[in-house]
Length: 380
Image 1 (cartoon, rainbow, N blue to C red):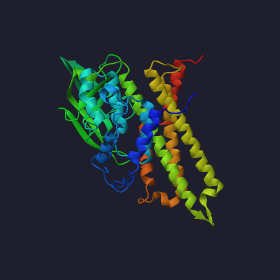
Image 2: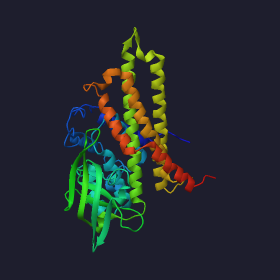
Image 3: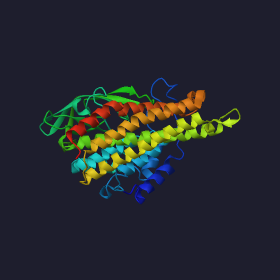
Image 4: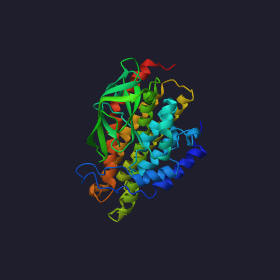
């Protein structure tokens, strides 16, 4: 096996680090001190720098002026973004663009991808359904009426919906697998209600009341929505990994300087053991993340495995959801009261980690899903 990244993937990491180098995690009001969203919009100047560095077109094909890279490259960039709590819709934007490129009509690709690559057009996705517990595609119905589809239903906790230009909305027709509709934010019949995430970001509840979508803007390809959902989930695992690594690095620096009884607390066995346990968590999060991302790309290329890629994604979710929680809890413990200081960024990382944990869902549910996959695909 070769676990090294390609030259192109390493170049994407270097470009991302250069863009995120000046991002301050405490650049907006604290979610602990703000009644409501910390800001009305995402970080537009940072978005412009990402576009100028060609990171928004990273996963687009050359025909769409992109670099033609894969899910692994996207996850590498997301990892760097999470280290500094970058407030941009990078995951939702790129994952939706990948889905449009792979499964959308030529008309839809021509309408969305050039602007998406330049950053002049922002994409997001509704992936949480009506309540966050039920499958998202069951929350909205799609009915064909002549040459247009009519959408009815509700999607909750849609990130960046108030400022995105297009929203990918999963739906069902009552006949088999889910479909995916690309809906402009200003569409008639689409209403957005204000919601605020645990991390203080502005989310939205989407209410679709007779929203009409052109036939070319609805993706009926079997597996398209499932693919988008898996990329979104794997990308969220990458965000959890980057955030956890940022937190552990912050904790290492603090405990190396903080002294008790004349010695840095990092030299105390109890502190070192806890930090080592969290390092092991991060390495497990990392290896399961790259396995999931590789399987998604391998499945696109026709390569298979003993289980569907959903199995690898489930394992990555188990480690990410549990691991990011343990990392920030240990960090708070090792920082003592200083970790709760709102003038110190650790509390922001804690809020973001809790949001990512909620998005990923409980590990027990993923373990049950993995068990179902193993039962349906016995290993020889």
